[in-house]
Amino acid sequence: MIGGLLLAAGEGRRFGGCKQLAPFRGRPLLEHALAAMRRAPLDRLVLVLGAHHERILASIDPDGAEPVVCEEWREGQSASLRAGLDALPGAEAVVVGLGDQPLLSPRAISRVIEARGPGASAVRATYGGVPGHPVLLEAELFPRLRALRGDRGARGLLGEVRVRELPCDDLGHPGDVDTGEDLAGLEAEPV
Image (tube, rainbow, N blue to C red; front, side):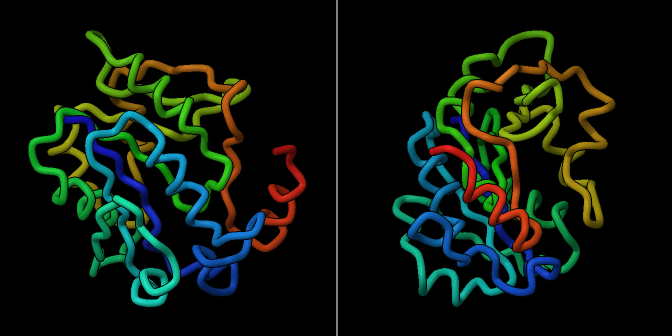
């Protein structure tokens, strides 16, 4: 089973509030990344929420994604990863996406899944040579991911293992939303 983890647990402090529900092209920001993950060839999709989870679930339709509330969301991305992995027992790999990346492409997710194979513990999309998301993580990394603490994701771990870098410049846009200015900049990107 290839699982999908969409991480959307943060409180949006730099954004000034619940960025998951900020309007972007006619619907909540989070729904764009959710739609991309749902259209990808994933066997199960887990949506990891934390801050604002009740408000988010009352405002969006997870449409097949399994919402999981990360009670330790204040700890940061490592807690979200643990909560998501715990919700996908038996997964042979997971594809991680970020809920604040509205221009994530389902084709990029498909591309990282198709690139799995011997010799790499992870497959990571790159844009202009810069690593981004989606990132596919093989099950052999799960114990080390569960050991992470603090507001850090898998980036440091990926510096210690074999990663297959996969150009996805032609698929979507890697930008994420941390501020209102980020949101306005992505709004201006071509559809």
